[in-house]
Length: 461
Image 1 (cartoon, rainbow, N blue to C red):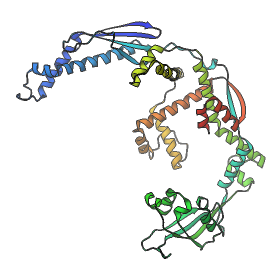
Image 2: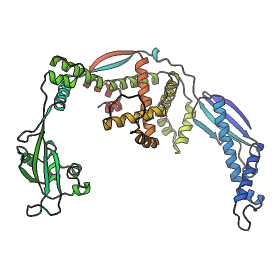
Image 3: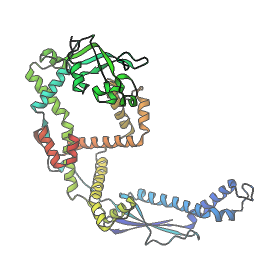
Image 4: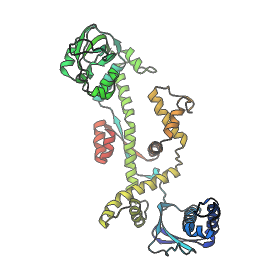
């Protein structure tokens, strides 16, 4: 076997591989002999068919398979051994290379074109400062958050009369045409949130009820949501979607959460380790919490802006002509010259980012391991199931079967890998890229993101 490589243009090379007859003949003959032992050919006992006959029938197939195997190994090993950094994958040259005659075995020559990556030397620390927006929560956000907290940490009470926001625990009984209890009908003790009742007339009748009162109505008409009705009455969704029966709802209990007062007891429940002393301190602490919760959006925007700087600056070239051919082959469709030129800019941008990402991950030793993915999956289910945090950082035995099941989904694992990769790169940029800090409100931040990249704005909102 002979392998040669020559430069054919800027960041382009052509590899010529000659597979000689001696490289493949022995293995082809061996495969024919092995096939002869188990081949069933009409008129011959197993293992007794003439080799010449089998060669005429199967010889070309075995020859092509063996040569292709040798060819794949040859190009892969050549790239690896010569430490070639290529982009895309090798493209077979068919119009200029010598013709292949599979009917008359001999030496075969194959040509491949390679797109080569340029040498890159980027220091993130040397970039010009990129603006990082510290998002400061506004008074309206603080007011809403405080309102939510006062509701969440409020006291549960059982008032004498219903009002909006209450949870009504009661007993549903399906009625027949006469208004009496339907024999074999649906009966269910359940809870109904008064705010989930969308029909104004029914909601009005349910407001002001006392324990022991009852009202007759159709649950589907009341809520307008078949899924809620199915869950509330424990019936199939299909049945809930067509529910036309009237039910008597008898009120058993009224539950209400009374908002917490703005006092030290409330402050201590929200911030138990270091409670604020005054309402002003409490609101400032809440403002800081909101700003911290928005910091990841700011970090992502900073990462995108710094990335645009790297992408726009002429830091390295790409083999454009090679990538045009690669795009056509990858898409398996015919492009007009105009269509190809239209497709090229987004392809080059995507390729430039892939090259940068690979370079940065190697330079800064960023590796996403299987253990990283498993721990990410575990953290998700720990939040879902309310598991306490902490521990030794290992896998919880009770979650291991669930994690194993998720790991079988290659697409999901790929998405997690991409997410973790982006998270690591965001953290890298935050650590290395010089920053110019500016304080902005959230609405102003959204406007800035929209102007910079509408897609990012949609994610932020």
